[in-house]
Image 1 (cartoon, rainbow, N blue to C red):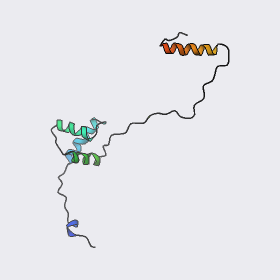
Image 2 (cartoon, helix red, strand yellow):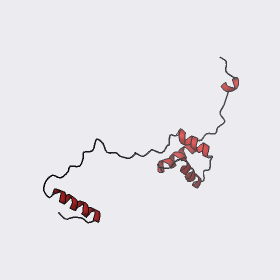
Image 3 (spheres, rainbow, N blue to C red):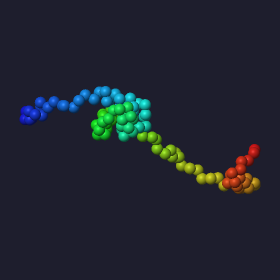
Image 4 (cartoon, rainbow, N blue to C red):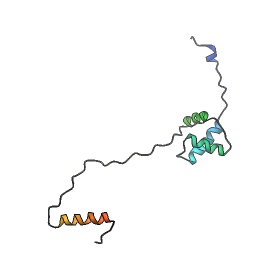
Length: 109
């Protein structure tokens, strides 16, 4: 096996951030629509200051991405063409209703 000894013997010097993980999760649970930048502001208000890169790393490790909202709802299927009135007084009633609605007036049935 040809691997450098320095690679095999590497010991991470990163301090344990369990308390930071818990605090970030707590703020993210309270404010679900907050991203990592807004969470940093909330942590600073609590007196916890940290580098934005470290916060973003922890935010990603805990999978705290903001949920995407649903898109625009579109009509399903094909639309039917408007039926033209073919009887007596039907066209006049349609014109009356459109005129009343444009004026903003309602009608009593």
